[in-house]
Length: 412
Ligand code: AMP
Ligand code: MG
Image 1 (spheres, protein in one colour):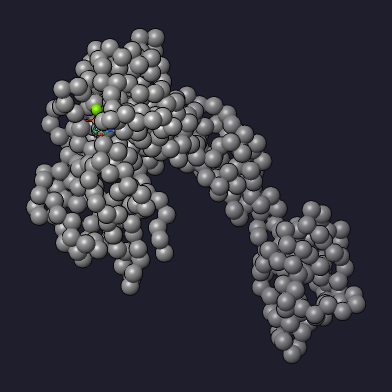
Image 2 (cartoon, protein in one colour):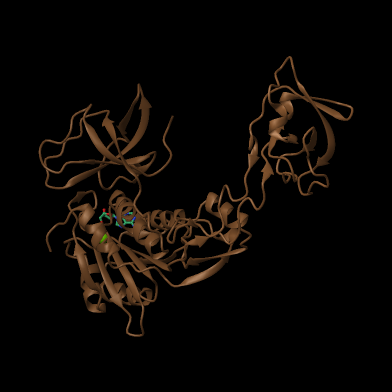
């Protein structure tokens, strides 16, 4: 298989992602999910004309000519608290004291804010001319009944939850989360907490992948370490195919003991891609396992180098998990920044440089996090973005503009 670009690889992978079946969730559990159906307002929000200020509900025409030094005097006939409604009709020459959010009383067509009034026993002096609808939030202003207020596939964030709650909906239909299994491969790997023998290293990829899943709201299952042994790897991967997604790390390159692709083939995983034109992360593999009993498992083989594994997750697995959860927006936003240092690239692959962004003198500068070796997990530490350099040519110089994908908060 030939190398394909990052964008083509992502498009190809997403073409195999169908949203999972829906479920209904209480609002307080729906954060981070995506809407199955568009939401149409079944009622007006707000449900009634109401005051935007603490002040007095009046007939605006009464304040014609009112000025600071020539206030208009009105008789106060009622006090309307939020959650109640006025008992008096406001006619010309009268006013009702009103609190923010209380319904506009009959007869009134405006509210004058307290700051422009002086209240004395039984009367209020209005010190400015008020226009009809001043300080009134009309019924349906926020969401008119019958309008689509949220689109299908929209990500449910705090604001969307607010809209659902304001419409009186206690639950929402969302797509379910994928089940994800993670297997680290490599005979050199040992779980943290155990002693290391000569030649061994700790398994870090399984934990970074797990954490990256949790960041999108998915709790995966770490299934342990598969040594570089065909039969053991086969048995462990077979067990994991009941999940919606399987992520293996390592063993997917061209080494003598890289069995992951052979095992995928033996298990009937149909490979859709292998090798992406990027550095780090070239030997990524992606395939689909169709379960005989129905359903499928999306099988990712990410390279073992820790930076490769993390970058592959960011660029391909994160969008996959989001799409399985029904999100329409699954790719992090890309903007431009100016390199703070030279970033060479003589290869036919895009370099994905881990950078931190800084706003300086009206520009956004992309600073390297340091040595960018694929094996260095620390190159991801403190990275707020991935910068894309290349492919081909001599790379970019300090001051050149590059595309950057923000992956976390930026220093200010
Ligand atoms: P591989 O892709 O299996 O050839 O592994 C590439 C490099 O990544 C080797 O130096 C491995 O020791 C290292 N590596 C593989 N898996 C892990 C892991 N789970 N945690 C940390 N390093 C790993
Ligand atoms: Mg290996």
